[in-house]
Image 1 (cartoon, rainbow, N blue to C red):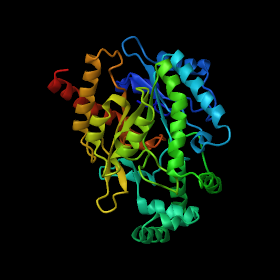
Image 2 (image 1 turned 90 degrees about the vertical axis):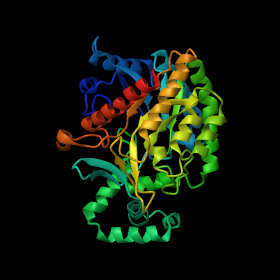
Image 3 (image 1 turned 60 degrees about the vertical axis):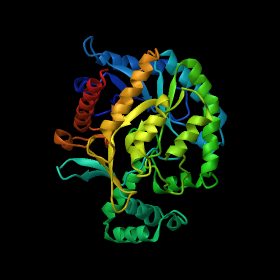
Amino acid sequence: MRWFGPNDPVSLAHIMQAGASGIVTALHQIPNGEIWTVEEIRKRRNLIRSAGSDQYPLDWSVVESVPVHEDIKKGVGRKSIYIQNYKETIRNLAREGIQTVCYNFMPVLDWSRTDLARKMPDGSLALSFDYPSFAAFDVLILKRPDAERSYPEDVLVDAKRLFQSWSEIEKDQITSNVLRGLPGAEEHFTLSSFQAVLDGYKSISEDVLRQNLVGFLQEVVPVAEESGVRLAIHPDDPPFPLLGLPRILSTEQDLSFQLNSVASASNGFCFCVGSFGARPDNDLLRMIQKYADRLNFIHLRAVKRDLIQPRSFFEADHLEGDADMVGLITEIKKEERRRKVSGRMDFAIPMRPDHGHQMLDDLEKNTNPGYSAIGRLRGLAELRGIEKAVEQILDL
């Protein structure tokens, strides 16, 4: 399970009680681009291990994430220095026995949602993304230059209607939600500073960003390979263009390009079911079957797309979204079996329940959106049930 460090409202003790042994975390306190030292890595790993017991051990199994500095994405400034720092961080993580590193190449924000507490029919709260609401933020609150060109007319009509209905409090809330980015994110913005960062990407097309990713991988993957580290790039979330920023890991075609750019098992991907699943044209089963050998990390979460506006979605219960979770877990277990038969010691692919509804006692607590304890515990239990059933059927 993911843990955001010592200040996370969900403690390591609670994660241990949930039955998870692998901890997914990062050193969020270190500024983007700086080296993660062996001392800081060891300190965090020892903290995690000390919270476990002989019967219920805990260990730091996956880094999520080592952030890629914006200079690397744009190919400017101190890019070369930050790439060297990234290499040293990989080496230091390997020295401490951590072999899976997740990262992303999304400009500016790691993910975007318009509502961090959408009330579900059962009373729980979920994350959601409403495309017309996002357009209203972009066009009428942020007032990004030429933003109207990014949206079809029907979406702009809905956006203006929504904006006119919002109170000032509601406008402030959606602004806060969009700028929140990823829980545990390293950057926090005001509207003016946010627009300034967006302006830095005016000359960065998808092709330029894609070539900058290739350049980054050509430098970093050999170091990961030598160190026994497997990299896992996270897809765009949501998987379509936002705010005029380039998106280069949203589709199967994007994934194929990234994996083929540097042929190495260390150049792999994180299969985020919710991110890829937010696009109806992504065939999730085909993707996992086709690229299973480069599958280095898995986020199991489900989204439910809006039938009228397919770019709108909410985070569903783990077994109630649009994805065939049973089919996906079956393919994952088949790949683990292939790896085991081939003699790989690291045949087990790390996976975690991603995003859960805020429910029960957690409704009265302050939590990282999507990362409350009980909703993820429910997801973990449901996913484990599928995993055990699939293992029995496949006779694993």
